[in-house]
Image (cartoon, each protein chain N blue to C red):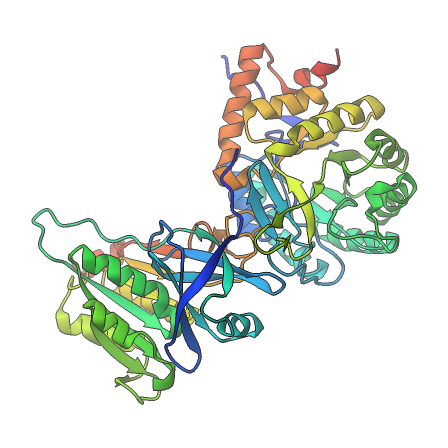
Length: 312
Length: 261
């Protein structure tokens, strides 16, 4: 019996039917929406980042599409961890029969805050937690994301690890807006991170020349989509050489070829986000099919065999 | 390259007060759009919010003064710029024409300023030869808009107000039901509605009870407007990109078939 290439992967001990993951910040606001993406073919779905208290986020305009991707400064709008805990409990009910994993995403502006949100969020039992230390649209009290500093990134990682007390694996999401992403990756691994998500968005700006001012109300925002894929692939490649823990490769993936590229750079799983803009949530099924076709063409029977292939 | 969704500058060429709170703006731009689609309107330094198209060629918007942003838009004068992103979303679809080219009828049901996208639909439908009946409702006569505009297009207009200050007393959906009953079963090929969510729920029940398809236009707070951020999710359905118009087919469940074989 030839059932074709096997797309299952294990991410930090969590078994996923497909390495394709809905990236945080895209369609992650509601249980039914997360389930819709899982039904379309995602192996795991990431909820929108939540904080301890509700956040209104930045005023509009907050999300735009330019020639080569999206730019956003939503500002981590979320209803607060108490509401998100309820939503994720509903999501878990809908996702279980689909076999897709649920990733909760946490964010705070202090080290203790990260620990508090994570401790609360694990009560719902997400399969993994992603620690968003890298949103370019909000900053710590020193005016920079935690992900920009190896010591701060490690402190957050250690605090979250202690807060969740081994109940779920912890992924730490890194920023590309740093001089040496491998150094940050090593620091969070040493602090106990079970895996690394990379990358978050690149800081950018778009100015309307008629209005003579930046279009985003926050002025700057995070770039995502096709334009950043080579940056993401380079970051995953460098992180893979620096650490042992698994990597979720995220950035501009919109096809099966892109997913294979990310895995060859060293990713265990592949985040898909902004491509939903062009193709809708149904693109997960298409990317999965294309990935299987590429695996067959390239002679791979399991995703694991492709991982890090570009490092040989 | 992907399809861009960036604000495009436009200028106000005409404006008119439709009521004490609703103002229409005509812009110096045209869009290729379907009735029921919307645009994000940006005023630099203020906000960006979704508005239905009243007309697309040239663009006409109806702005109801309900908060600080709409108050700022209503303070604009002829010649002032504003910015548009769109058209966005999926709109109303007219029924397929009958094989015998018999002129069919559709029924529009509007609550308050929800009449805006239905004006665009009425214009399109009348141009294609449809008979258009419209029930437009409001809390009170002072809130009722577009009665004359719809009549001028050639629609058959029925008016209702909650307090009976103009037209029939009661809800627009009650007036619509009386019209459906008076005209007989299958008198209207499709119901089209835009208004408060409670009204849309009532139109959905009405359509199901009378075995008619319904296209309902919803309103939600939006950010991206193109199906990415999830801000406007409604139980797995995205108001911005799956909608804002929800298409419901005519009821065909077993119960109704037994009652109406």
